[in-house]
Amino acid sequence: MSALIDDPDAPDRGLSARQMAFYRFRRNPLAVVGALIVLSVILAAIFAPWLAPSPESAGAFVDFRNRHAPPSWDHPMGTDNVGRDVFSRVIFGYRISLGLVVGVLGVAVPFGVVLGLVAGYFGGWTETIVMRFTDIMLALPPLAMALAITAVLSPNLINAMIAITLLWWTWHTRLIYRIVKAQMNEDYVEAARVAGASHFHILFRELLPNCFSAVAVKISLDAGFVILFGAALSFLGLGVQPPAPDLGTMVATGAEYMPEMWWQAVMPGLAILYAILGFNLLGDGLRDMLDVEL
Image (cartoon, rainbow, N blue to C red; front, side):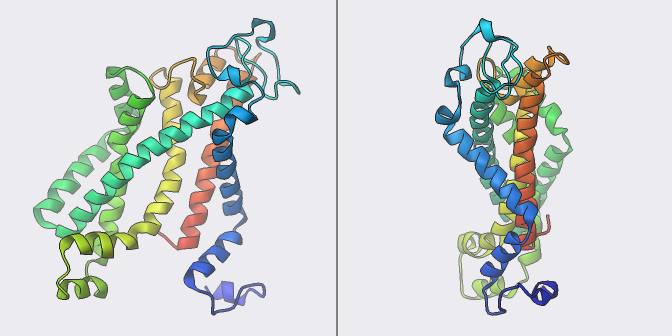
């Protein structure tokens, strides 16, 4: 903070903690770049039908006259083995990737947060059962477990979400448990107990708000890893199936034509890298802004 105050361009000391946090975020160029990348990915997914030069390429479309065309003005990322525009499929592929993120984290985060709150607050046998089960799940290799689950189930987007969600909640449980244990002896918790507040009130009105910053940072970092896991499952043929424009599937199909027709694998791979980089930079920026240790 002293370095910030010594900065001649720093705002006055009278600003609130929230305003100072946003100031720190704006002063972090990598965080701003990450936010812009994430925003561009989200906008591309939302407006894919209008941004894609060839929206029909997102489905069961063939144009054999233009198959294996290299990058050009008409096809900025070239075309694939059946003539579909790779750029259009990448934009629509972001829809699937972001849908996977929302589906997985929308279930894993609330479940993991509640378990962490309960284990950290009640302690005793509750803590032992929850945290030992969490440790067992953490001991399982995530990708290997996801591969096993999707191999048993039919490979599609829903089952890929289930496979990733079954292991992802553990990280949030450990994170919230650690925060709650550190907060249990704070004055505001003791004051709520003395005032006769219920367990529910203390858990969700007192403790949970103090976990929001850590959860927000963890979600932003997790989003990139979920995209990577989903792409890995699809690359191995256990995720989203063709002709859906999934980025991992596109890399796997394009790899068959390497190195001569490199764009079919490299371009979707760069799209995955772009999205993951954006979420990671945003997460690092939020961690610095909110002063959170994960």
